[in-house]
Length: 248
Image (cartoon, rainbow, N blue to C red; front, side, top):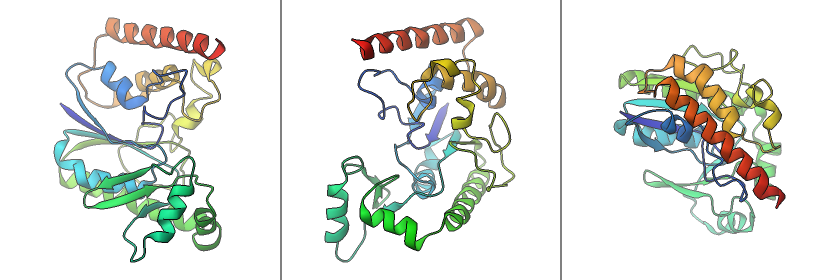
């Protein structure tokens, strides 16, 4: 079975602290909790919903099952196709966090700018596009993704990074409460006291979410209870090792 996953940094296991190299995100933890699953994880730190839906369009033909975790709506995924590329090239180069976050998507290049503090991106959000317009755009992206997946007869689930009641779209959602994001679950997990102040939840919190809400809601080749418990124990050992690394 081939699983395609898309998200922002919540699903990108490259975006982790140096002292916690096994700070795995939900796509990789799902792979640990299943047998014979071929994972194609297209998540990227800082990704917005425009990039996510374009990645879905490019890779939908390779998937049997798709799980998308929609990001915050107010992000700029910039297609680099300007007649004069100098201005944005300089902006991207000047960004200390997202300066290397240029990705190919089909025949286009996207700069995944997320929370860039560069003057150009800040001005874009403050002067040109309102939060409401971002929401309206994301509604269209989610509705398009649903139609595309249904057209291809692909089993899918949608999840959320942050609370997104504005969507109000009838689809196959996995949320701990209606339109609540995984960021909200961090404070409700049985492992909430092990959170480390990192934006994305710890692997143990993510594991808890998967076990409670993803496993019962989607037909993947899940391991048996004994193996699932072993994964949980392994993640706890990794947590303890990481705390030691941080304190050394």
